[in-house]
Picture 1 (spheres, rainbow, N blue to C red):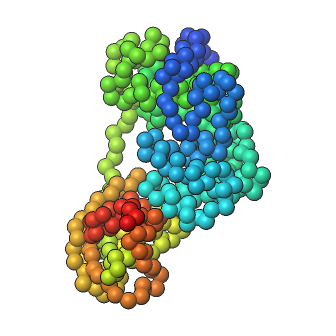
Picture 2 (cartoon, one colour):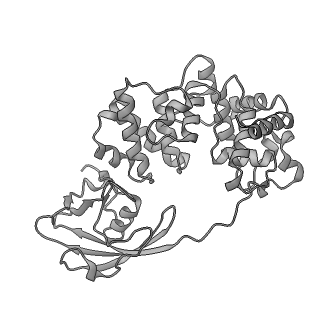
Length: 372
């Protein structure tokens, strides 16, 4: 550890009372969230150990996604693929279909690559941060989370919730984008030798349920007596953020073609790049950096194209507006395309932006079909 980090860690130990972790764990024992991938404190105390596969799967899903959005996806994944060997044996296309709607699709490709590698090595995940970081799609945060939660080893687990808690506890005035090392040093100093996995989850739960971005419930916080922001009376001022730059606006067009029997014409996107490997309706050549054509004259093949509306979608680095056109087409699918029957559309690997385009042209088309 660098001398500066050692100094920060020593200063943190002096700043926080010795019983900080025990107070937080006592709160967690009573108020923890029930999550489908989590082993409860009572189960943990009785000797039940978290399944590294389920912890890894949940942590990858939770990157850039909310807990509520992940729950149903997680349950569907573990029902289809209950362990890493089963996931490794699954066709990549099936994994992408199951992931559709979660966004950040490079995570799904890395998920499959990681499962393949772990299964090839005997199905056991490494139990150290360094070993986990060697796997596809696992960075500093995810490796720390798996190490702490799945293997109960001390590790500084710092997500957005934890950043907010620490920023308020210590009234960190450095903008969040520049305060990562300082926050991590504080967390490292607080991690207890006993129950580090529960401590990591307790910090996350505290940020998610008590130390919320707006109107934090400070009177219910087990750490309020130690919180610098509570003493100063302005917890909502932390963490300090720099003004966000406006996202660039991109435009393009999408073409939703339907056959007489209700099938919809689709194609697969290139494996590399935005939405790589996912399924789409034909669109013009928009990217994160350039606009695509926006008129029906840009249709990829002849048809009675009619405007069906406009949809918008916000990606991480840009916003997209698509003009949607709809036509009825007869005959075979053009080269590089395929027909997806109405009852199969909901199971295709369609990202949310493509579902929006299809719904604009054919309301209800992407909803799961009920058997008659």
